[in-house]
Length: 233
Image (cartoon, rainbow, N blue to C red; front, side, top):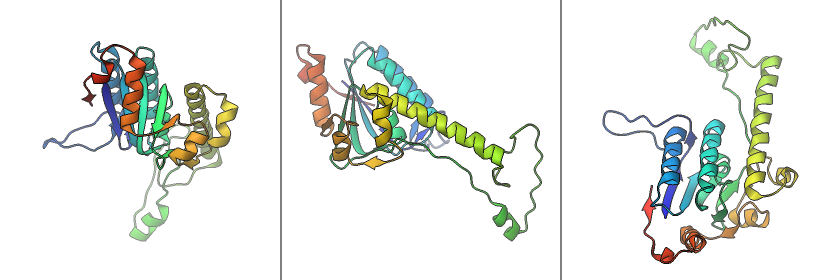
């Protein structure tokens, strides 16, 4: 039984280590997807428990990880054990699991998305800095910190956020085996405790890693499953 840990902010790309062997902590999509696919193809791995402790992060990265987890689920049992936090992208990557366990006080849900940018024109003025942008192409300066969104740019960003939110609802509805209309009222960025999430069908059971492991070993239903060794990733 493999225990795969998703701890920290969910980010695009892969981790880059510095010359001294360090690197920013978090869940990097390319690295994580590679690990998921290895576990899916490993004949010595009978099941996977995904241990989630994440506030979320990149929507693109969350989508990549959730897609890989859906593929893994088709090959072997996949269970999620939520630690103290599994919100936004943390819940996004949890949704494909066959069973979700959460602690009574786990902060989870937060099915929503937000976006925007910082505009530093006031700061530039105070510092005596003059910024002269050179742009080519429509919306080339969309996320420039030297100007606010134009009405056209704001509409484009809102459209993108709406599409991400719709996809989030779709992933959750599919994973939970429910209709989108049942998920939307408990989404909208709301954050729930594990106990509240259980009442709303966002998790299946209250419990920790021990309970998740017990469930998945029972799910395997093969002689000696209860004594299968653990691998932690």
